[in-house]
Amino acid sequence: MLKITDLQKHFGSFQALNHLNLEIAKGELFGFVGPNGAGKTTTMKIISGLMRADGGEVVIDGINALKDSRKLKEKIGYMPDFFGVYDNLKAYEYLEFYASVYGILGRDARELCNNLLDLVNLSDKADTYVDSLSRGMKQRLCLARSLVHNPELLILDEPASGLDPRARFEMKEILRNLCSMGKTILISSHILPELAEMCSSIGIIEHGSMVACGSVEDIQNTLKTSNPVIIKVTDTKGLDDAILLLKENPEVQSISVQELTLSVVLKEEGDASRAEAALLSSLVSSHVPVRSFYREEGNLESLFMQITAEQEP
Amino acid sequence: MHINPIYRKELKLGTRSLKLPMIFMIYTLLLTFGADFACRILFDGYSSSESIYANVINLFIWVAIGEFVLVLLEIPAFTAVSIAGERERQTLDILLTTNLRPIQIILGKLMSSLSTLFLLTLLSLPVLSITFSIGGIYFEDMIRLFFLILITMFFIGSLGIFFSTILKRTSSATVLSYAALLFILAGTIAIMLIAVYVTSVREQAVYLQTGTWPAERQFHFLPLILLINPGVTMFTMIAKNYFSQSVINDYFEFIRFQQHTFLTEHWFWISILVQILFGVLFLFLAARRLDPLNHKEPVRKKKAKRRKR
Figure (cartoon, each protein chain N blue to C red):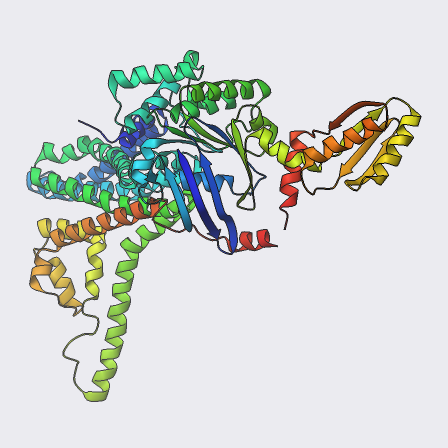
């Protein structure tokens, strides 16, 4: 659905996007994660035709977005990170205005607006003036607005920022619902756990480059090899035996002990799973009373910090 | 009929705000008091019908000038906030991602501003009709006045939209629009006067040296700058109808900046044409500037340096 190849953007001497590559399949809910200033909004603005790229290619459903922005506008619905609303317009009038922009008028427009308000759970607010809606409601209304022309690709720049937990939950539900309707969604955030819960795959951007891309599990698996292996034994004798054995193992980089728990960091060379299996096998064959043996998972926050820290210049 | 969606939205928003009725009220009051004041001055002490007829023309002129000035002063206030206002309200990006072309956005904004301003002009009809009740003014005079006001609205309105597009803040767009209006109204005349003074001094120097006056003045094309001045266009319209047929020609002869007879004879229509062309040019430039894919983003050097560090 969306393919970005070698996308580049400079602001003077500052390189906002550095040969960015990304591919999103149709019907996917793709999370675009990165710290502030990483290049998420710039990428989204280029895709939406709001900014010119210095190089590279953006293809949406076979259309070159950088060359044929007019055709592209029919295909995408964009929701910016910061947006305003018109005072003195009611919620349904707000949607009717954008429907009229796409040539949808009269009864069709009214019907469409009612459906969209229903979709974003704002039917009861149809006659409320937009400026008096809460932030969460405005976000949902703006999402409904981006759907008036039934786009195939939705580009949502931090749609959940500044929302309370309930509003976030409602937003996630709506996005999942849209995804089930066949929409492809590109959603950005600087909070990885927030996206990991609902996205089928994520891309982590830092300094204008994609540093990790794939499903959350794949990214976690790629990175957790650097996490320590936690070994718990039943008694102190077993602990001493285990330490002796681990010290002789060439795959072991460091050992730290806390009561009956050993935290072992393995060398990041070769196959990590094979090394783990070999270590467990040697402990068991030496009759070390192992109570549990597992690779520390680490939370998404630390994963994000780990990935982005690796890219610091 | 498909009405420009921006135009329709702006009209809806305009009718719901208190600003518009207030402007209409103030405008009508100013015009009424102005007309009343002019009536008292012009008709006070006159009793013969001949003298009343003569003063009706003067009343028409003063009311027309008053109306022209009021509209002129209001155009930048309406147009300079249009695009910059969308930007400040953070609604412009959304509009630009829709399938509206930049020129449609620009025209929708201009049309809504002009509609409001034209409504102001129509509001002056009752005041202008005072002159009709007495006689001495033709219907064509009124049509010509309305036409001139409409063209001026378009020209100055396009300028206001242009500044509104290139500047981010409504305040700076408004200030610059008024500055440009001041230049067009007074600056062009000032340039003319300076040119007259400088060339006169030079010619005197030549005369003192050679004993003869130069055959042709330098910068003889300079009076053409007045073609963009709606004030001069208004003046030529009034002067041609009520004073002298060749007032502009007489003036250029007086300052010895003679122009082609065709130009001076048709100054009103030529200046109207020039102002329309400039208006179209400003709209075209504004539409180009509004298209995000047609211009480079301004580089904020300090910010970029800070980031680099």
